Amino acid sequence: MENEGRNLPGIVAILEDGHSGDESNESLLKSMSHAITHENWHKTDMYLKPPLYIARVHLGIINPEPQPIFNEDESICIFMDGEVFDYEEVKKKLELNHIFKTSNDAEYCLHLFEEYGERFAEKLNGSFVLVIFDIRNEKIVIANDRHSQRPFFYTKIGDRYIFSSEVKAILKDKTFKKEIDHEAVANFFAFGRILVEKKTFFKRIKVMPPASIIKWSKGKISQKRYWDLQYKEEYDPDLTEEYYVNTLVKLWRKAAKRRTKGKHRFGVFLSGGIDSRAIAAGVADAHNPIHAFTYGVKGTDELTIAKKVVEKLGIEHEFIELRSDYLTSFAEKGVYLTDGMLNCAHFWWISFLSRARKRADVMFHGHGTDFLLGTYLYRLRSPKIHLERRLLKAEGDTITHLFYKKLNLGIPEEMWSSFFSKAYYQRIRKLPFESFKKALSVVKATNILNKTDCFALRSQSRDYWNPVILRNYVEDRIVGFDNDFLDFAIRIPPALRSQTKLYYKFHSQLSPETAKIPYQRTGVPPKMPELAHKIGFTIKGGYKTLVRELRRKTGDIISLPLKMGYPDIGEWIRKDRKMTEFFRDILLDERTLRRGYFNGEFVAKMVNEHMSGKKDWAFQLCALLTFELWHRLFIDPKHA
Image (cartoon, rainbow, N blue to C red; front, side, top):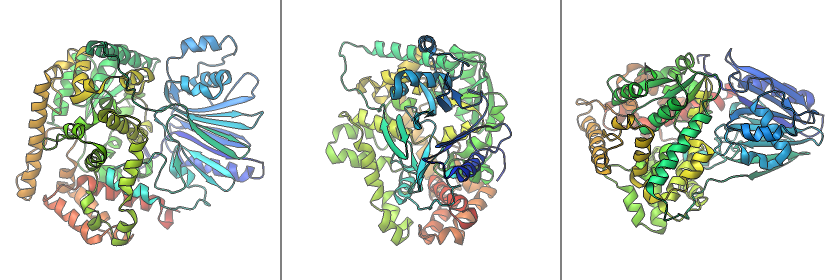
């Protein structure tokens, strides 16, 4: 594994009542902080005062001052990973009662906590994990942001609670018993992600849910939510579409302005989609210069569209060509960074982030904006399945089963009995649907579009792994998760969001010039009528289907280029010799096949079908590769 980019910043902490374990806790904390410190640009702050043993690893970009930050009489202190935005007015009120020693976000949060107690978190707009220590009363409060943009894991081992921004740091406690959570494994292969909110691949390591407050006092711990994502279903009939579009544009610009303060170098990832150009337009309007990066393959629509967008916005642009053998260099590193919970198909990020870091300190990216302003069902549909229309006509359990089937993006359900070993299939066969129903049941919406959009956004909170990879190199910011913008967006009637109509109009008003440039998925500019987008979507989707059918039926003899979307990973696995050998060597290795999870003959069949072009199993083979590498890194004896 290469050294560069191996670990990411964050917080590690141990909470234990009493003083008997001081020495062992200090030793463990140092080992944990070392586990998330590797780069020569990472900095470490450490604090050891029973019952709290804590360290912060950071890039020195956002809130670079040493932590902890103390209040005036040093009775309370705070550690913070992340940042909050736009609090100048509230800070002025706090200054009437408090002395600020820095302009640090952490100090602001500390004094806000002194004034409002646990309700302070409701007033924060940002991306953060906070650990506040009331020294006098030996009480500890931990809070995270609304969307859990910075994952925080925890477990209890004996009398101590261990927290960490990475699972791997918790494993430094050699008394931790590694037991695999089979529901999490079933989720990973069914959906490409773990749907159940608190789960990881380890039974006793949980994820702190979004918008949570965890309190610790004298060995006892409690947890509650201070906010919950739910769509508001009472609509004012007098509010027009124009009102919604105007307000969205206003709030988007305000959110971008909040996130472009400071002397940092700002960058944005620019693709052929609408999310990224809306971000680029909002950020460029709030702060210039910015630097746009487009990654991909030469000759694709992505690059052509991105060049037109930067020309209209007048911003700098850099194209980064991806290598077709990227996984041979970065698969193990990516699995290590993400604790195995992101399919390695997405690891192309790692291949160019060190280059992006040379031009930017803070990168903007989209994360769920299309779910907010379009609809998730429309995004999932294909030319053959008009899912949105079918679900709107469906009722009861039919809705659940239709949605579940479309969400099953990994190993098709009908193949599970062949893909897994008989024993393991019997153990997990019912778990994906149970997980899905569990995740869907917490969504309190009556309208099916609201229900599925809310489900998608809540699930998106578990998809923090791409930002986690990014955060190893630069800080990241997400305009669409601004509190004010999101609070307004979830009040928009679903009929307006349907078919992404409002999304196109929002962008056309936000950036009229870039709205004249075609959208990659439809080949039609956002400002064009809805019918044109439907036709374009069908044509583009039909071409994609045609390409794959030709490959399959001709055994890859006829292979037209896919000039749309992200890199054609399936083609790279099939045609790049290094990639082909890499996948065969690991997936067909006896070490992989004897673990007891999979039917070795069927896995070999999948590999051969993919390499011959009969079927495209790219995403599934990448899931297998990810899971095997996770085993080798975190389970096998030599890494114990």
